Each structure stands twice: as C-alpha cells, then as structure tokens.
Amino acid sequence: MLDAQQIAAWHDTGFLVLPGFKPPAELAAASARAHALVEAFEPSAGASRFSTRDRSLVADAALLASATTVRCFFEEEALDEAGRMHVPKSQSINKIGHALHDLDEVFIAFSHGPELAALAADLGLQAPQVWQSQLIFKQPHIGGEVGWHQDASFFVTTPQTVTTFWFALEDATLDNGCLWVEPGGHHGPLREQYVCDHAAGTLQMRALDATPWPATAVPLPVAAGTLVVFHGLLPHRSAANRSARSRLAYTLHVTDGAATYAAENWLQRGADLPVGGLD
Image (cartoon, rainbow, N blue to C red; front, side, top):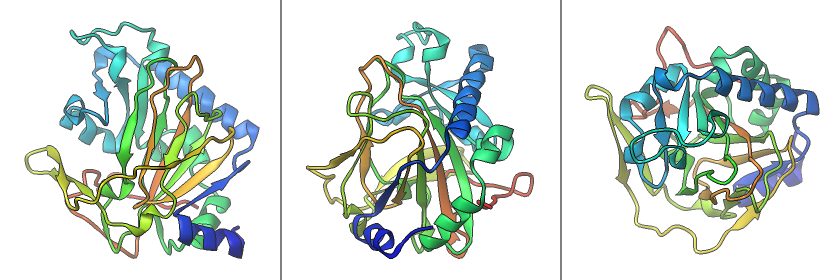
C-alpha cells in the first residue's frame, strides 16, 4: 500500500495525505447516509451540544451513551441560550458518533476492507482495533472551531498506538475549516488525558505536560475522497467554518490490540459489542 518514501514521511512528520483513497460512489453513499441520519433525527429524543472550547456543554451521560450507539450532537451555535434550535435541522448537527462503523450498514462497508487493513499494517498496527467513528459536519456559517488537541488524549494505550483515519467526504478548504497540523509534532509529549470515572459516570481533562501548543502550523486543504492519516500524538486543529459551504468528514480512531488499552479511557466496549478490526 505505502512505498518506502511514504513510510519515511509518516515517521518524520506524523501524517500522510492520500488523495483519491475513496471512490466517488462510496463518497456519495456515505454523504447520502449522513444526511439521512440527520433527517431521521428527532431532537426531542435528546441530544447534546458539542464544543472543544467548552467541554461542559457536552453532557457526560450523552457522550458515554454514544460509545455503543449512533447519536447526534448539536453545533454549539445551533441552539440559543434557552437550548432552542434556531437554524434548520439539516444545518444544526456538529457530529454523529460513535459506533457507526459497527451499527450502520453504509458505514460498516465504508470502514472496512483490504485497503484499510493493508494501510494499517504499513503504519505498524499489528492488530487494528476500531474504537470510534464520527461524522463531522462543519456546518456552513456556524461550524465550530476545534482547538489544538492530540487524539491520544482520548485513547490512551501503552505503548501509544492510536491512529486517526480522516476521510474527506467533501472538499476541505481554507475557507470551510480544513485541518491544520504541526509536522513532526508527534515526537513531543502527550499534553492532556481525557479521564473517565466509570463508576461515577464523569469525565475530565487532566493536564499531563505543560509543553505549549504549536505557534505555527500548516493547513491541509484536500479534495473529497482524500484520506488523511495521522499519529495520535500529532497536534492538530481546525478553524470555524464561516463560509457558505459545509465540510463533511468521517473519522475512525484505531489502536493496536497488541497494546494495553487504558481502563480510564472514556470509550469502552463489552461483550455485547466487542471492538473489531478493519478487514
């Protein structure tokens, strides 16, 4: 799957950009299914806002329940101060997670296959385990900013193995909130850990290292169908979307089953829905 130059770049920079990884037919099916899930969503059934600026807006119970379900989370700016939706429902959802890859037929197909398994092997994942999937909408005009973070904060393993697979279902541009990364930043420390007290059902972000977030970064504008894969320690962010175009993406978070998965990670799986692989 990957050549020697790509593997060297992966170890050096902590990310790879793979254009045309997904064909138009798969993109169309995934996008159509994403919008169908939003259309079927009934806000009265319960939902939470999602914000990386203010994590208190994300109800702990709602996030924990989403580990083994398919749940919608509102854009922070989609609701007024009283919690009422003041934009059309079709433009109100920040993300859908976190078990699409196991529970939805379209995303089961999208999230598995020999190409993904081969890529994971080339990246050094001996026994890939897919813990989480997300549809991230980045809605026009109100798509929220995602601040600097490292995905390893949310999926701690010993040794560190979490790897992110980020699929552009639509073009990601400088205007609509493409990814920004710090090349080589994965050689630095893990700054925070998202810790769950499963007995109490509470979550908190615990500071680990005072290393500042990057002062400079490079943008990754990509065309629909591109796969961006990046190391769990790579600092990355995305700006708010104030443009008239959405930036729909789909992500998988994968660890190596050869590593130890932390008991205090927020997302856990049991015998009723065991964690699976990529093939």
